[in-house]
Image 1 (tube, helix red, strand yellow):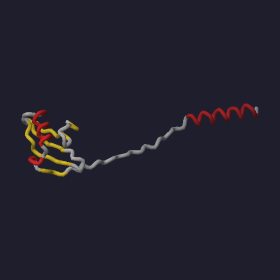
Image 2 (cartoon, one colour; image 1 turned 120 degrees about the vertical axis):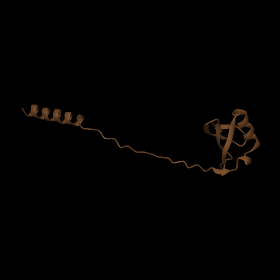
Image 3 (cartoon, one colour; image 1 turned 180 degrees about the vertical axis):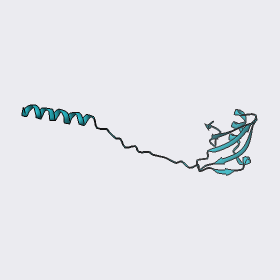
Image 4 (cartoon, helix red, strand yellow; image 1 turned 45 degrees about the vertical axis):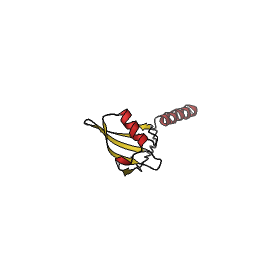
Length: 97
């Protein structure tokens, strides 16, 4: 009888262990990237960037221009009634269209 009681106790303890709820910690990582572009006049955009813009978007009008420390140019353009932002390097290669 002792063995039966002891075995029953182990079985019940084993079942309660499996019935417990596992909780996981959720860690949220937020990385905030700040734009470090400074506004420049559209006339001071390098010729290579202007040529690439005219070649890719002939009907585009350059509204605003920005530059960062790596000499990447963020251009806000308007094509007909749509507006877009494109990024090019100093040589006129597109980084983001």
